[in-house]
Amino acid sequence: MDPMAEARNPDSTPQASRRPAFADFPEGSSISRELREIVKLSADFERRLGRTLAVNHTDLVAMQHLMESGPLSPSELSSRLRISTAAATMVVDRLEAVGHVSRQPHPEDRRKIVVVPREDSVRLAAQELLPLVGGVAQAIADLPAEDAAVIERFLGEVVEHYRAALDG
Amino acid sequence: MDPMAEARNPDSTPQASRRPAFADFPEGSSISRELREIVKLSADFERRLGRTLAVNHTDLVAMQHLMESGPLSPSELSSRLRISTAAATMVVDRLEAVGHVSRQPHPEDRRKIVVVPREDSVRLAAQELLPLVGGVAQAIADLPAEDAAVIERFLGEVVEHYRAALDG
DNA sequence: GACTATCGCTAAGTTGCTTAGCGATATGAC
DNA sequence: GTCATATCGCTAAGCAACTTAGCGATAGTC
Image (cartoon, rainbow over all chains, first blue to last red; front, side):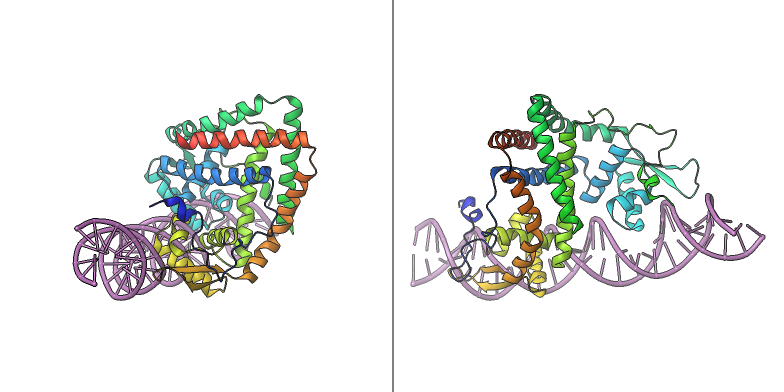
């Protein structure tokens, strides 16, 4: 059977409104479509990275923080991931079990520990990220300065709209 | 205590590399920083929308599909959300319990049902989305045509880089 | 030195997923 | 037409990952 037939929303019923419920929203320019696509693809990419490292979503986000910020305490991880400290303990347990991090004593505060990402794991993740990050970086580098300025200003406005919407 | 002190990564240890593990990655232009920020803010915004509708993440994503595509069958939801059909049943159970959707018989196939989003719920979500979507749409509309073209082309390249990275 | 706060952790309970399998309905071969 | 097979939504049982509550150890404060 044709899988795309189903994807085209064959389940609309006559009695239900045929127009998608959001039809009143401006369909959006291709720019806004692209932005949404980037957000979606970014989630897809995260899933793939999670498979590569063989970790679940929470643990992957923890790894991202560790890779970007360097060693962190479990309590810091819990606040960054917005999970309980108990859950953070389990995150570190799992990451340690598969060898992505190690627990080390905190040099100054003996209540704390330090969660250190293993270099092999960081390299593995970097290897997967590099084509994407590098490709985008290259695309940016290839931009004429005026174009880069235009894009930077526009994206800044988008960020501001997000922040404003989140403040309200 | 100063909460920012912790945020600045105070847990680095002397024996662990002081440089964040990803320091070898080009720090990235402000454009790439903005792109990442948009992805992150988008996730934040989704969380907030989930709170507004009082549903968990999976159920919110289901609602997004229903709002954008109109009524769908549980099996279609299961494939879109990449969950089992059993989980899709539970999603619909929960959404129905809080009144966001209703189950209706499929007019042509009596095995199927149709999950129809309730208009009140769609309106509630739209109300929360409008400031953001509208604000961004306005920002796009205010762009000179040449700038819009520049941005559209660039974002298209970013999308392509994502797709290429996901193909590999 | 006593009080209080914070650290990481364990235990018990909850939520949301999975796989397996069921009855009902649709579809295709003959 | 009839029968075999596939698909639909659903239930049941098990598992993974979260929560809250609370504990012992350590740090900071008076």
